[in-house]
Structures are given as C-alpha cells and as structure tokens.
Image 1 (cartoon, rainbow, N blue to C red):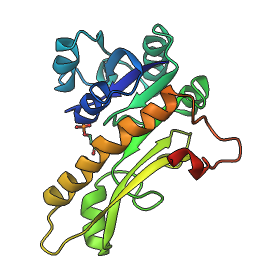
Image 2 (image 1 turned 90 degrees about the vertical axis):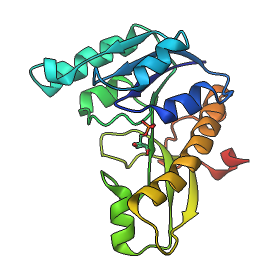
Image 3 (image 1 turned 135 degrees about the vertical axis):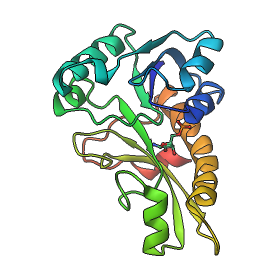
Image 4 (image 1 turned 120 degrees about the horizontal axis):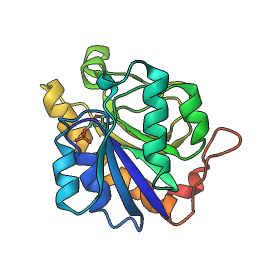
Amino acid sequence: KSAVILISGRGSNMQALVEGGTGLTFKAVISNRPEAQGLEWAASKGIPTRVVDHKALPDRDTFDLALGDAIAAHRPDWILYAGFLRIVGEKFVNRFHGRLVNIHPSLLPSFPGLHTHRRALEAGVKIHGATVHFVTATLDSGPILIQAAVPVLAGDTEDTLAARVLAQEHRIYPQAARWLAEGKIEFPRNGVVQSSASG
Ligand code: GRF
C-alpha cells in the first residue's frame, strides 16, 4: 500500500510516519506552503515533494482541484495529513472518500479546530491527548482510528503540554498507518471503527 503525505509546516509527524516502519510506500510529500520546513527533510530522504500554494490560486475550489490532481497523479491508497492546516471543501473530501486520514492534537470530540493545548488548559481538563481520524466534510469529526491520552500537569504551559502530546502523536500515527498498510482498518460504514483494530 502507498501513501501521499500532506504538510504545512515542521513535518515532525511526517518524519515519524516515514521512519516508523509502517510498511507503506511514501510516494510524495505535498505542502500548501512553499516555506514548510518538512519539504527539505522529505527531499533529503529521496521522497518527491510538491507545493500547491493556496496563496497563488484564486479560490478554494481551484486550490482543492489542484491539490487533488497533485495527489491523484501518485495514485496513493492513503492520503495522510501531517500538520496539514488547510481546510478543504466537500468535493475534495468526496473525491478521496474514505482514504483521507488526519492527526489532531486533542482527544476528539473535545477541542476540534486550532489552539487545542491552550483551550485544554483554559478548560482545566486533567487528561488531554491526540487522535488519528478519518477526514470527512465536517472538521475534525470523522471516525477515530486511535487515540492516546496524556496527563495535564500542574504548571503546564501550552508548550510543555504540546510537547507531551506530540510525543504520543509520533507513536500513534505510525501505528495507525501500520494498520492501514496491513488492511486492518478501512473507513467504517456505520461511522465507528471497531476497537478490535487496536490490538
Ligand atoms: C501537530 O501537533 C499536529 O497534530 C497538528 O499540528 C502539529 C503539526 O506538527 N495538526 P508537525 O508539522 O507534524 O511537526
């Protein structure tokens, strides 16, 4: 099985995936931002990179189409968002239905969207974490593949909490990718991935 990874920035989850012994073949890394640091790392590993710059395109539909074509050219089984921060439209999601996977830095359905660590601290939750989920047309709401929890500790700042969560992201995303490579998980018809997948 093969995958294309989508990034917007640093790309540490991309690195965890590429080096995670997932069994997936990574055909390309695509960024919506030309300055994404992760692009250089991917290129240094011999993975083809590509930029589809949303700022250079007139509207979201045009961007979605260009991004979709860039992905489709590689015919990947899976499209893995790794810190990919651009919201795409329903047409894009339908084009790759059931093949889009994202990592989100909270225990969904808590804290969808941005600034999850700040919001977790403000809410005073004592457990926080990360979620790997299928992408659907509703932001951060698709079926969950795997989650990891971390404690929120006294004195935590956004940065210390983010670092604790990120360490778990780097563990669970390759795990989920391994299941995808092995065909153990597919997009569930009834909206819920059975937990037996997490053996
Ligand atoms: C990660 O915390 C990811 O969950 C979130 O943005 C961050 C990206 O980090 N969506 P990186 O680019 O993978 O290092």
